[in-house]
Image (cartoon, rainbow, N blue to C red):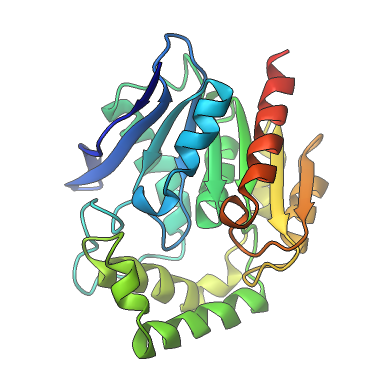
Length: 270
């Protein structure tokens, strides 16, 4: 039986304060269904995934957990004037994500989930799997970042101009209760001088689970050096490079991504 519940809020400790994180269950409700955890991009949220997580999970008989990081969607907004530190993705992977899993009753040590991450969410998935190798059954990462490229900085600067000069703010307001929190948290962090040296390549060899990395050949936020670097660092990692596809393969080529993801997950379960 498939389930697509309304979003809920989970109270999670973040350092010295408690924040609320938006989450939603989708896909199979069958006992024993494989759990897939969806991690969104730098401007994403539960709602910005649209129906993709449900489509993937229903096609594969999987159970999906979709959530919005702090500052996004209906989760607690970023405090006014607060800047994400350069290691914000490490903190999300090592502190916030384990706390969320505990809050919603997922024991990743006992039943490791698959992680499906897009962009920043893909980077967070990689950091989580490197930090807790026994708590991830596998990774599917779309347009992940493992180091900072100039093409990323150029596109993020252009996004800043679009936010100031176009209707981007109003469009983001459809998916975030506080679009200022979502946009400036991400944009300021990536354009901070401290972030230019951000690099997770040294962590990648610690990952022990199967990895599928997918990227579009027309990605405006990164080159193939990102997923090629994953293949070079992680034994057995598989790559899928998609034509006519930009930074969001699950939007540009959803059928190809679903087919590849289900084939990859199924191959590991045989």
